[in-house]
Length: 354
Image (cartoon, rainbow, N blue to C red; front, side, top):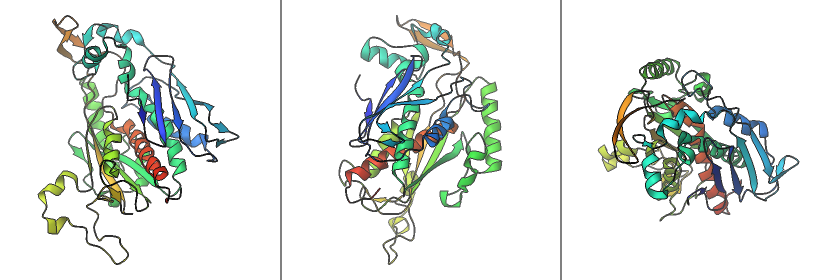
């Protein structure tokens, strides 16, 4: 299986399966001499871990990260950083019923077709549990990017939307509710809806918005390695993501050029930022902002028709512990992948100072 690494210079390779003994990663290319705040790294993991509220999966994992290499006396040495997160609360029997069955909209069928073998316990390598390793690496990337601030939050759940531009949002409210929506009334509405959906044995999707401020001008390459293209790849690599748009996104298609153009101020900034902080694939110093769309979780607690390995049509029903909506736990994952992308471009651009 290829494709387990992300990045060119600041490079993360992840390993492990949902119901194996552990998951983890190796970070290559992290500069030496970076003082690490290990508590902050663990805090990021705690934002992603299961069982943190009544609206997420009730799998109880401590998700404690252990570092095995690449650090000495609290700072990075420049050698590969190896880390592990042990799996402590697997219930593999919850998946015995799908050993020879393909769950609708999962990776079961395609994994079998491609590899001829699959770990059916929790989806194995295709499980979103793999993203915990990304959060560890992203937390280190954040600490490397001292001048950059990366903030994500839940912008919508189903048809319930925040309906505010990011510059009108109070980021201090994001962590005050389990949905991670920075609006008390909307958060309560979203939380109630997720609980209703869970009671129906169903799931719902939503969107996460991310804002990156403090990015210097000049990151990104103008042809195949455009900054927004790499951010798009990073976000689309996250489990359950179905869409990515930055700046004005799809709404910009309904505008005229005279409305959409970002006119310059004398200092090189722009009066508006419909470009989303990126022009010609290169950062222009303005805030970078984008939306990430997450589909409803494919495992539902309702009966559905599907097929087995022999092609027989059978009836199945989801079992086990699953998120009725992934977006609250996806917030730190989106931030982590944004941090990995920006950190990699920082190291590619030798003129940028960390």
